Image 1 (spheres, helix red, strand yellow):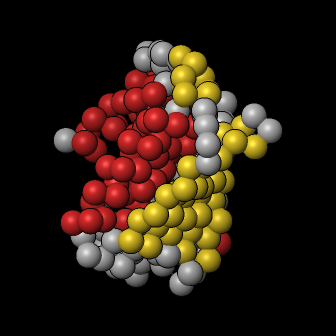
Image 2: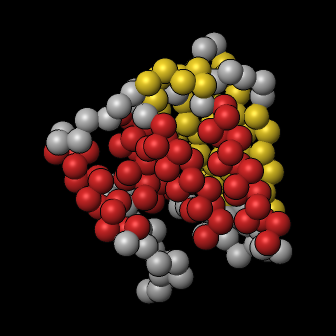
Length: 170
């Protein structure tokens, strides 16, 4: 159901039928709540190690809260599901009036040839002939679309066997 909702949501955003409601807000309380909720998962999952560090706020930005929350949740969930024993860290800070959110993990990493394609709709990194993790290749396409609609940037750094780091600038 979540995948179908995401497809429909993405389609309505792409067609321009759905207008996003941007409001100026302090995103720090939302980010704290997302991190606290994800920390609760770590308490109940012995294989998950999650830490976060949010520098003092406020994190005042013009945003569509619901979609931006989904972006953060999507990146955290991806970090969790693509690693056998995930070690995930979220850092957030302001730099020259820009909110920077960094999500890093110790997952398998992404090959350089795949890095340019991971934000394409339906693209999934190949792992032999088997996809260990279920999905439709929509999550990162949605993430990039939402960040762009916020006039932000998202970048990714990855090293095979070491992990991946997503950096969002808003």
